[in-house]
Length: 248
Ligand code: NI
Image 1 (cartoon, rainbow, N blue to C red):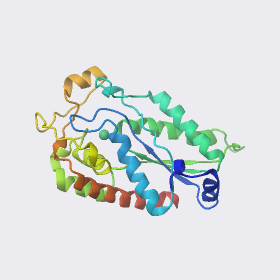
Image 2 (spheres, rainbow, N blue to C red):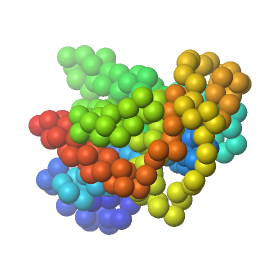
Image 3 (cartoon, rainbow, N blue to C red):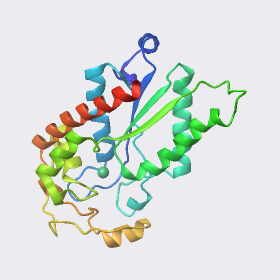
């Protein structure tokens, strides 16, 4: 079930039986020579839709611009600051909890969002904790962060198909997921060198200098629609297992 394809009456009826919503969260940033700029948002969006279709759990809109200042040296990349993201997530959850949503499951597609989302959850959960024994008049909420790639079924496929070529940015796994979702966007581009360099970075200029084509440690030329379909299926199953624990 998707929020943006529902009527308010359908959402009201849903809330009579469930307080859980999945929020896909990603980024709009370069993903190397053959990766789509929307990769980190497309992956959790597609997987969340699969979870919603299979379980009936509500899926909210995708927060599709994230913490990506280090990618701003590449055309088309967009970023918000950590302080902005905290405010946006607070406003999104404040809106939804007015109507009765209490459990927020953030399905994430971008490693750079993790630290900020955890800080945001500490703020959200702290609102009632700081109110003390007298209690807060705001309804309690629970937030959880889950990265789409962290489940055992997904890991098994990535390891088997790509091994050391997986790398850490513009990975063949994430590119495969986007190719399965949008086969019309598949790009055949040679990689030079085949395996991208590894290492750390600070700001956008440093990133561009260290990783000239945008990739880190990966060879996304190995990406395919077929593996993408396998990964989506695996990620939906991994996410449902984890979500069932969160729902209680
Ligand atoms: Ni990515």
